[in-house]
Image 1 (cartoon, rainbow, N blue to C red):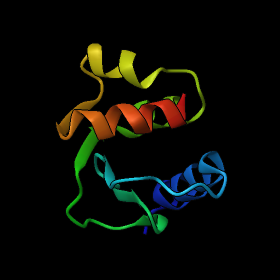
Image 2: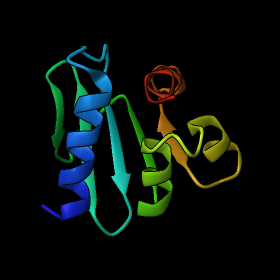
Image 3: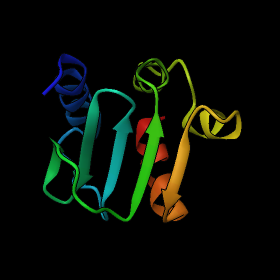
Length: 96
């Protein structure tokens, strides 16, 4: 597992604050790997999920740091979403 994935798992776990995510989502970070968020929490993995969000490492880091709104990232083409848009929006609310 890359250092970026490890750091992202820790950051997302902290952002969720112990709350379970109702559904399943995957963040695919180009060239690094993927992170799964579901009712079990946050972990590295590449399982099938309700929605997959794909971005480069810089975009993902900016979203985690609160410097980039997930909706703005999607609208500007920096974040690709494949699957359940409702699940993506719900997760976006958690990250904002």
